[in-house]
Image (cartoon, rainbow, N blue to C red; front, side):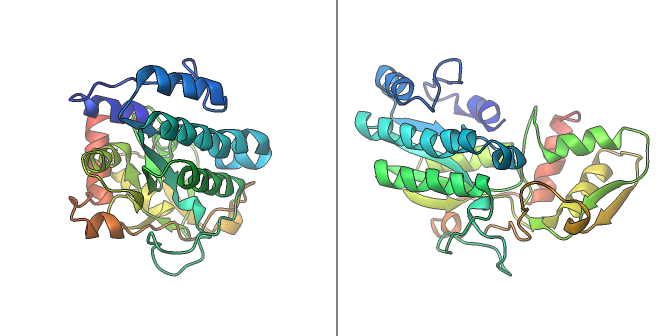
Length: 271
């Protein structure tokens, strides 16, 4: 989802898009072959197992993709002299803090997804000094899958009110806005870890209500508590990220989540 959104914005660069058919990041030989053959200046690592509940059920796959896969990419980048930009997640935090998390806060994931993504971060830092880890949250984009696509689908169906959790809070972020931010980071020598989300915060219910209003969906909505909607993986109560280092480096401010959503639905009314 992020890759298909980001690629058209990289038109000024000579880009080589790679998917699993070209090479499996879980196979160190595949990754080394790809990086060696293409000799890139920069590798943007967007691949991940992002099915949070699926990670709880298929732990070996989660570790293979999110941890081992990230390590393989980092090793290849270091070996062949490429800068590595890797996308990570708010799930590396516990979600218990009463304010947005910034880049210097301690991590403490509570799910297999979060643990494996953090392991991937650690591997990147260990194996590739020339790296930039970009954490984002509540991502949606063209083609999905995402919360926006689910709400658009449910909102067009007949039935009782759609029940949406109202006690988890985060930063809805469009892949379009994230891609612009990544392009700004690509063109600077920043290294380390940065947070990159749209500005402002919302609960999932707030997010759904905005989607329904902008898309003029007729079906009613109803808020609920997390306890009323149990899932295999624990959801963080607080997914908010503060773009502190992005701001301190003087990079352009990200759009508000409301404006980004409005722009996205204008360009992609069906998701």
